[in-house]
Image (tube, rainbow, N blue to C red):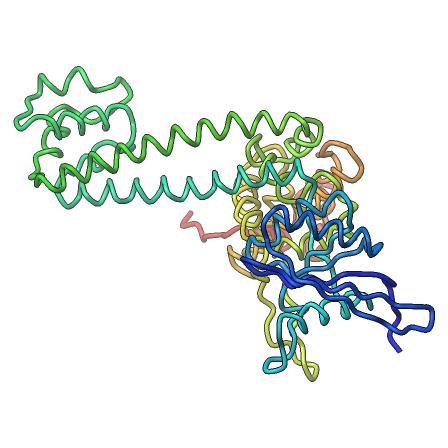
Length: 426
């Protein structure tokens, strides 16, 4: 017989306009009685749900994470109940035998036996910070899309200014494009005042690159794309100001995360907004890496592993960690990550190697926030030296008289570290 973990609990089947709540009460003889009630998702009805749960002495609630519809319910019940948000695939009833009432009873049943695991829900302050940062991520994608549309319109009109000036959205390039859109004939005298000192292209090259034909429709499109791009940038700047204000509450944790090589201020705030500041929410660093989608899935049957790909989780934190990993392997602060990446890249390729580095960074962040200590480079320097001296269990022999490394051993050591050797003609 299954153990009953919650004597009194509630299962809620959430929808857009209404919800079905069932309180499951189990007596000392392990006999469970159910009380089901329907509520609207309006605020006054949700307050009635809160009073109904208090009257039934129910403090443990379970509901599935249906879109964004669970959030208003969570916000109202958070102060009085311990709420477990569960992925729908873990509480899904049998198809063909499900109704809204049966669904709420089924959620209450699996929850009272402790058969479902609650999703990670951070504190209210972290959730506010996370919402702004995720919105900023979406705006960054929109900004990139507008840049691509702008560039495509220039190419369609045979404006090849990107061939002579590296940054199409730089000060010089945008000034010249504004001049092209507003004036039919352009001379060298018109361009010279707009060229900055760091531009290497000559006036003749720039003049030749903007000698195109812009249709009236393309002219309007280019202007609108540029206007939209500038608006997005202004919104992102305002968001950054608000994000930094909210991040001041977690100044200590952010400074600790910034001590990790390759992680800047904005990346540290983004990582903190996703994983929170309390690492007790996760069992260990492996659980956190699994939650972030940085470890292979378990898919084994009959002693055969069908797939070892990483999971689809961590839609927001995974890209940030990969960007930080790319910066870390280029950083000169700690060579251990670079050497580890080169070794893994040789055996498994770039993609799997960079995922492994991202997982190492997240493990570092977990330990840093758990122990409240900054990143210690000396630990990784010792590991790097130890690996360098004992790579692939190669014993480097030295001659006492000449103190030279044996050539074959040195070649094998360099190859194990990911270096490529080429034969010399000398």
